[in-house]
Structure formats: structure tokens, C-alpha cells
Length: 395
Image (tube, rainbow, N blue to C red):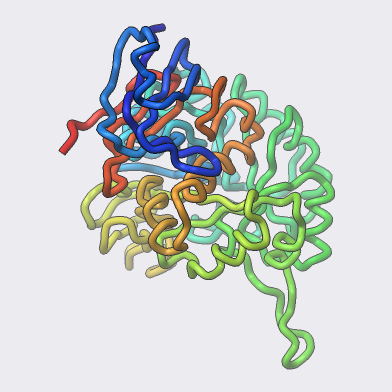
């Protein structure tokens, strides 16, 4: 593996931005960070002039159903190009997210995907948004199943050598007996699609659930039992627990930015962003087919909605968000600085997946998963393990 010097960049560290610095990559790892004027001391196989563009940790997307016309549910013909496409949006690692229904042979599907050699953004595991949820959301009702321990074991086995991240609802009967099975091998368990009360949520957290995905969306509040007294439910239980992390779809519609700001105050190191992107994300506005439903985008980067030809016309159905746009939205909508934007798109997602000892930061010894951003914070080059997986000529 060749060595690379990225010369003269503004390097985003966890607590500061180092202007006019260089970064040396050797054997796929970050070997050294040094002032640009000292770069002559490095003997690299190749040198890339960053022109003082911003060099940030590569983005990690924990929740993504599709990009362009590709979705992992469709099989290898979409899964392979999906991984190859994501680096143009700065993504270096992701969880292909599937919506299995109760009758799917998800085990056979996962086995085929797990055995494929996808190039581009690194597959960090598989995320199943169902069937162990209480509410289907925009998905078809047949995505709701029952708690079945043997099926969970079969799914985990089929996805080897990857981990399977299950999204569950605390109010699904019997789920707390299954969460420890899902959490084996240091695997996080996500909470979503729920109308659980405080006690139900706390019980699932005690059983091992540790993260809430597309927080606030399909997180229903309990009914008001005392007039004038605001009820508390899963949202409040999750915000109150310092050990539970959350992610948001920051497209300006799925959640009010004030909720993300509140979460950052409650959980500065446990709040992150996802896309929940659907097919059509990154493409012009229009209508697209996702599994058995039709969705529509009216504007780039905004949510998908089910059309009149679907089971719930007008309902939100994922987003047109991409991770580079989420990064820019963090700065414009949340008024955060570059290190914070990098934390919530890279470092915290790595922490959620328990790989933050090697990914998510620009730090010596970490994987050289990086994204080079121009002055408008558009992606110009993406590196996975020090190798260029996307490059666009400088403007």
C-alpha cells in the first residue's frame, strides 16, 4: 500500500482546525500531522496539494435505505454500486439499512450481501429497521413482526462476518428478552418506531438498547392522562439517560433544528446525524420506486413522501438528504463550528458503532478515512484507508 502526503490543508481535529497543515498517510493509517512548512521532511509515494481546502474525517451514515437509484433491499445489483456512489457525498462508512417484512427471507438476502466484495464506502454492518417494531411508519404494515429469538440468531449468523444492528420498539411484547441476544458481540441496539412510555423505554435500555435512530420521528408521545400536564414517554426517557445516544435527520422537515440543539445540550458527545436517505437521494426531484411503494421528492435534499399511489399518501418516507448536506446543514441550521459538525457526522457515529478507537477522528493511528471539502464545503475528494475512492477536479 502506497504512502500519501495531503499537503497544505485546513485539518479538522476534535477541538480545533489546523490551518496550513499536512497529513501523512502510511499503510492506510494516519501516520503524522505536521505544519505544511515541515512537509519536506516526509518522503511519500505521492503528494496531493489540498490548496488549503478543509480536510475532515469521512462521514459515517448509520441509517440509509438508498442513494440515487440503488437500495440494498434490491440485492447485489444495487448494493455494489451503492457503496461505490456514497464517497461522492463524503461517506467513508455506512450501515446499509433494510426494511424486512415478516415474510421476507432476510437471512438469505443478508448472506448474499455479506459475501459480496463492495468497494467504495466501507460497509460497517447491516441495519434492520424491522420487523421487531411496534409501528411501521412509512413502510408497509407487513414490516411489523413478533419477538422471535430463533429468527434473530439466524439473521445474525447469516450476516457474518458483519454485525447486524437491530432497530426495535420498547413497547413490542417480549422484546426485552431478545435485546441481549441482539447486543452480543459488542453490537449496539437501536430504538425507533415507538409509542413506549417511560417505564417501557427504561426497561429496554436496561436490557441493552443504547441508541435512538431518526429520533423524534415515529416517537409518539403517550396520551395526556392529567389535563394540562405534559406526558413523558420514550423521548424524555432517552434524553434523560446519559448512556443513550441519538441521531437525527437534519433536513429541515423531519425535525425542528431546535430539537437537535436541545439534544446537543443534553448529550454533546452522544448526538449525531443520519440521512435516512431513500432511492432518489442525490438525484433531481421526481418520482421513484422503493420496494412496493412510490415516493416523490419535490426538492433536492428534502424528504421523500409517499404518492397518491401508495398506502399512506403524503406521508414522509425517508429523506433526500446526503451526509455532505447534513454536514453543511449542521453549520447553517445549528450554528455549530467545523469540529462540532465533524463530531456529529463522524466521531459520534463511530462511537455508536463502538469503533471510535480507529475511526471518526483525524488522529495519529486512526484509519485514514477522510473527506476534502472546498470553501463551500462541497466534497472534492474522499479517501478510505488512505486510498482515493472519489475525486473531483478543483474548481
